[in-house]
Length: 423
Image (cartoon, rainbow, N blue to C red; front, top):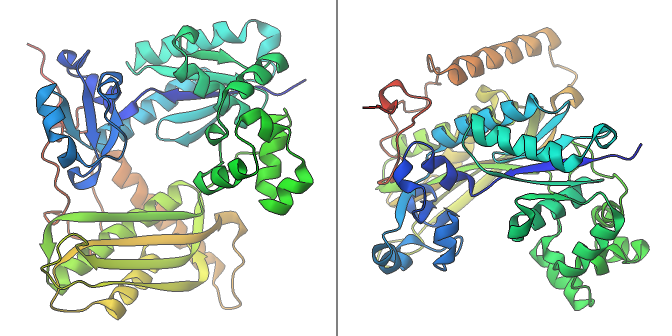
């Protein structure tokens, strides 16, 4: 029995979320801005049609925004995260096995489904269920491997005639699409690899699929070999072994107002370290490396500039907030300098492994480790419940130093006072 994977990807997810509770936005051009209302990170189809590019700074398109009455929103992660969890819950009710890949994407394992009927009809059922239950449109690509499913999803988004669904299980359809598709659209092939492949004369996905694997490993890596094998229908990427698996986790922000004093700056480090540790636990990972960075603005030549970072390696890989906080604050103390107006700080965690693969040192107390894990689990459950909040002493409960979000929509689904009113 050949494998079948489906990639379900929410269309223009952030913009689609903003439309859910405001019918007047149905056909309006929408853009969503990054942290601190900096750059465009999401666009509705109407905004794309106006020529607005991803990552363009908002101030550069102010004229376009006024001319076309484009609706501008600050990133509302509370709303997007909750809608994402609802989408994933719906998918879990429709598929025997689901792997959440990102906030707006999930792989479904549909192996064996083709024997029970049309895969395309099943995909239509999934598409309709998500639209009816949540209100978010999705595209679905199906194929024998995850890399081909990603390619099928690309076609489902690009070609209107597909109505958002592409079944790429047939070899002849795979070949036809690979002939038409640029090599940069392959899952896991980044910008540098694309440039190198094009210098080698490999410009389409089909040319990559036909590349000699020995040459590919010599010029790139074993990861490229796996990608080539996946393009040829061989399953090589398990849930733990994806071409774009996360190797680092970063929490950082630019500040709405400059920070000049030690204590509030240290609080930002504590906040980011705590958030990063919580996200790390959510992914079932532990880290061995903690990095802290602070800097002044790169765009104000009239002020003294300073940028620095420091890194530490933990004696035992951890996801315990207290361990990561201690390392992060020690690193911050080592690079802090008075007399500057700081514009940004961040905490990065790296060198990951599964929490069940940690090799304890000689002096580690195993029962104590179990107790620590239980404590972190309890804190996470409280914080995610929406009924309370537990934070560590170094964090600031009121984030008044935080980013500028002048166009923030209500947290419709996670805050009582933001519930929409129906008149």
